[in-house]
Structures are given as C-alpha cells and as structure tokens.
Image (cartoon, rainbow, N blue to C red):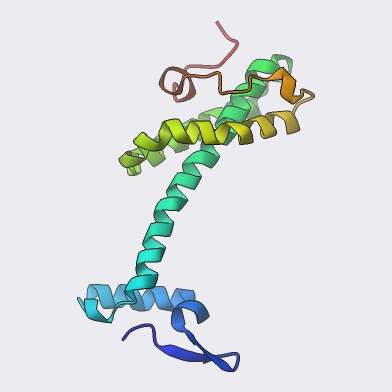
Length: 157
C-alpha cells in the first residue's frame, strides 16, 4: 500500500502530491501496522526533515519578535505598554516551552539569535519612530542573562 499513483487532472501523480492529508493518514496506518516495506520512504523522510526545519524557523521567529520588543522597550521607553510587556513575556514563555519540548534546539540558539536580529530590527523600526541608525547593528543582549531571563527588561534598573 505505497503512495499509489492516482489520476489527477488528466495525468498521473502520486497520492502525496494529489492529497497530502490522505497520504499522511495512509503512512500512519502503514507504520502502525508494521508494513514498513510499503511506506513512501522518500517523501516520508522529506516530511520528517521538514518538521525539524519548522522547529528551527519557529525558534527564529519567536526570537525575532522577542528581540524586536526588547529593542522597542529600551529605545522607545516613553511608549512602553502592557501590550509590549505581554508580548515579551509570551515570547519568552513560548521559546522556553519550545526548548523544553525539543532540547536539542539549545545548540542552535546562538545562531538563531544572530539570524533573528535583522527581523527584530525591522519590527522595531516598523513599530516606532526610530530608524536603523538608532539601534545597535548587532544584538546587544546576552542570550542567557538577558534575552531568556524573565526578569530582564532593558533600560530598567
């Protein structure tokens, strides 16, 4: 019961391409039944690999949002709001949850921080009256002591 070719739009295509959800359900069924030789190994491997990339992307995105709000908090302190505070807290919580569920992402954190900073700058610039020259060109916050520290808010004593 491999991903059988089915007629789609007048030409043959795999079930994987024609009905992804159905393909996933069939792959799960085959796995549970132990019918490993019937699995669509190529596409299954690609999807599993994609899940790993998705976790890394989520970590980067959450760091970008967190860093952007930390920048706003520090560099436009006169506009601080409950909304910014809630976003900072929520992103920290979600990042820690993600790291708890996938501890091996811990090794990717320094790279993710570096990769997320340009997005953070774009967010801060887009949501403030400030410009690129008003912000540090590289992330000014220490990952462990500041970014992920729930009691750290830049610009506060």
